[in-house]
Length: 309
Image (tube, rainbow, N blue to C red; front, side, top):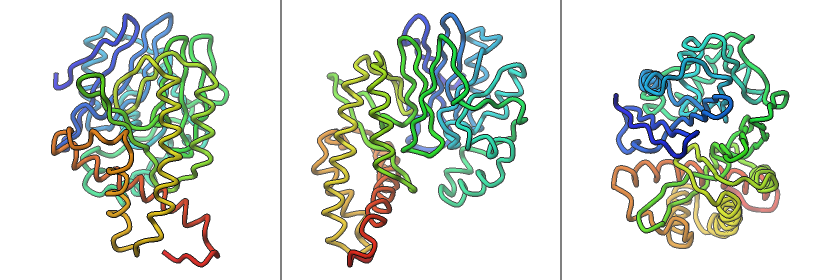
């Protein structure tokens, strides 16, 4: 088996899913919650479906009460067709606007290839899912799991809270644990991004008073509320820094100059230089994408004010 399952607690397992891309080890994952009921949160890209299936077999998972998708980007939902076939009785929970794209994923696949290029090809295409397998998150709730609609990273983003765990997807940012209790944290704000939605979603999670936060990327922390508050301040810091920086440069160098500014000023990314070089390369790509989300948001705010980008 290519992946090493991490048992976080008696009822919680982190399943790393590594596509054939340099720097992507310990970056994409699925979560398995096995308490009174058993839930799989996200499924990773289709290229990793064999590894996910092997991990579930290794854990002796013969049935799932539900598959919970935080959103339908291919690094989180790309393997849903394969996993749905393997667990034919299991309902799949997602945001209402995600359902048409899972039933007929051709637009999602073509759009992903256009945006991600070779990375999308490494993730692999997403297979369709029968519509009768899909349930909307806003109508799904058990005494074990509560969905929370959390747009920001994507309009179709949902977080899920159990008694002990908050499965936040990318609403709490992208997290990496480092030695000596240090960590790296950044926003995941690709275009089209709306800061108000992201802040409201973080506030909605804080209001639920979660204990432990389980990130889509990557790992878990026991101090969920504090980590969410830290990320909320980070989102606001980025807005302040980028609002100023974007006016200084034309669009040919704006993104790279904004990245330099954030790496200097955002203390939560002060550990960037400690990351392996291939991980730095991966993060630089996604950081620029997140910056583009902010710049698009800020440009939409200042249209008509004299700024042209």
